[in-house]
Image (cartoon, rainbow, N blue to C red):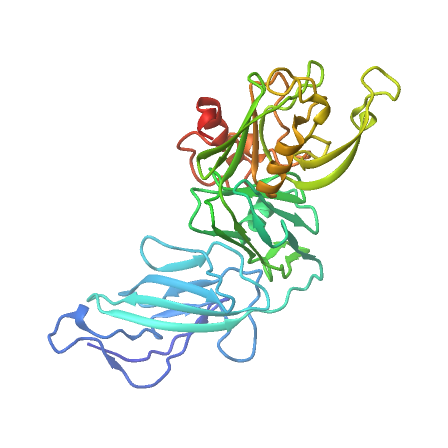
Length: 422
């Protein structure tokens, strides 16, 4: 069978893709079986609603459409990709007559579209199209800043994205979220973004990150339409790594902290936690930083100066776990109570030697979990990273895409069931 170019008149917004040459291409191979043939040029079988090489550019506000023009043929596959490597999502009709994009085209981009077809005998056809999209009319751009800064962190470190403008509409949030990509090598189990507010997203896996992983965060927002007056701008990518899996579990009832490294217990430390009225927060906290010296005052947590509970102390080897002032630190004044009673104002206190060891063996992003305290559970957001205290199903509900189905307990449930294994 020979396919020769046919001249067609295309009305409305559908523009004809003309044939590359005047000559036909034989579809059947030497054995006569159509599936053994080399793909023929399907230019006369398809049309699309884009420019035809006349210097014009496609409107990124309009979806891309590819249509089968031959009554006896059909489209079998369409792949559209821009010069930045971003694939354009699309949908093919059940009868193979039409493919249309289901995601916005990027503005000011160059696209290559590969179309596969077959004729009435099943012989395969191919057609490659290319076109450019115009620049967006609006000058308003949405960008994002990823966090933390580049470096090595513990396996509990969430990824953050701070947007330059608020995004409230769920459909617009979905466009933004779909463009924010996180990859981990080795791969993490599951993972998703959670909208903390209109301008901030956090990303975490279902479980903690793998130890010694490389995590890369990037954005495909540039040139993507978010709303009529807002387009995505360029975003600087981020690359971080994780170190060993270090998790410190403090049992407030037994007054002991057990430090695990790669799931092996490496040290047990007598501690004191918050006394009645100042109970230490339960739950999983992420190390925010380390300060060799901190001056701690009772007024910083609402204790009136001069009252019976007032204090003003120099504190060394302080590892911060909340922004409101909860630390793991040296407390030489309470060594007699460490391992026996809870006498602090909410921090986890230990001897100077043990605090120095802890200070030197943990890093930002490592995990500190408190169990069996009478305190409330660590805040999920706003006072550090309590992200891991949110059950996986609830975390996924914070996504504008609501993708995936929870299929098992996350870190919170596992910790409650087997805290000694964390």
